[in-house]
Image (cartoon, rainbow over all chains, first blue to last red; front, side, top):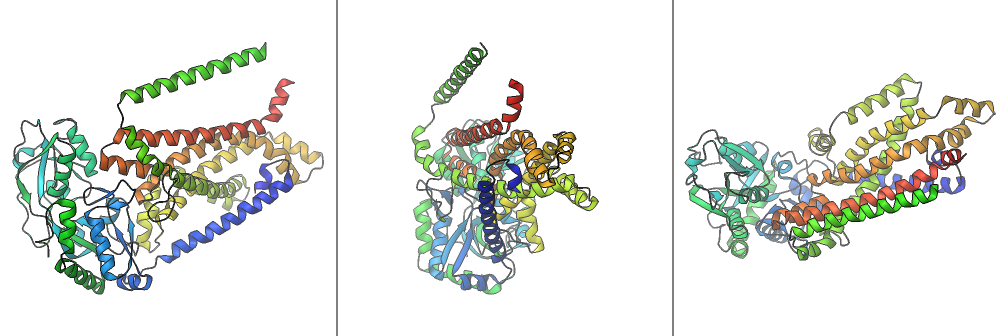
Length: 291
Length: 264
């Protein structure tokens, strides 16, 4: 093919095209290998066989997971994942696809576990298993310092409220949040305009001024504290909206893997590892009442 | 006189470019950007160091994705263009169907179908494979049309004359049609490569740590949006300029015949 694209130096050209062809074939083979390596199978089998656990998390969710100054993934969730892999005696691999690719389930063996601050909602439980709740951080309302009207959650009717795309807070605004094993949280508001997006982008948008792009944000107390510390223009108002547990998620349908996850997390809780990681990143222990 | 005019034109172009670049730089300076932060993140954005998983990252990964996807796209495009120019109705139908499908749907949707929807059928591709596949198939369709139009634009009499002179079909294609077609193909094909360089940022949604992914990730967690997005934009721009220079050289190379004709 390449031969017909040049009209002189034919010997050189043929040589080149062979080279390029060979390289293309090599790459093709490489890609085929990549494709076929992921096969459906029990998660525990795969983890034991490979000696690797692939954990999926969000790279823009400080202080739980973010890319630090040394370009490494760091944060509460990352340290918990490291402790988990170490306790299990396998190597840890981290992957950072977008949130909506994680919560929609059907991982098909791509990932083994999600230690990624996920709220175990009924909706998600249809596509994912939640073997362990590893910390809880209540939901709160965040507004701009100069916000004149919004004092409590009842004041957000008709307002534009930022929430993480596909987050439990988005469900909360739509009156469709059902946390497993808990009564539906009170939601005394109507016609809220939910603005789903990246949480850190939302905080940034709210800091532009009250009502400029957003009127308020609903987020977890832990991320809200990190955001208000970084942006003094923001503040938390009103009481806690609802207690929210955050769970470890796994691909549906591997009870043995889920039992392993439960066992490892019980050990990490018992030896104080979870509490230590929580103290380090959040300055308090949010892992105490998770179970 | 003509060369003086040309030199004047070129000088004016350079002066205006430098003026505009200085204006842009001043504008950026006025934003009071945190240059120390940019300097700290620049090696990662450029990808001079490996990612934590040992693979390429930043601009290096962007270039890798673009280069590999270009090679595959070229292969796909040549086959499709041949089908498009073929007298065989089945080959023609396959080629037009494929080109229509991939030119008529957004690249982002194609990326998501390959990465997220295919696993539903049990086909689980890695992030890199999915990205390369989507980019190759999408740009292959566009490039096929570019190649086809280039070949069609060569007057039929050229082929007829070559055959009348007793040249073999292969020599006619490779020495008569191809050089003339390439002159027409290279400018739009170069534009496609530059376009692919930028569209490779779409693979960031699958968690590949390429230039756009890193810039956004740093920006979101540190709130240095202006710094990181401008830095990423500047790197993409510089890479595009390099590609454009290569394209201009190729254009000149394959435009020699016509340039000679014009001189008379």
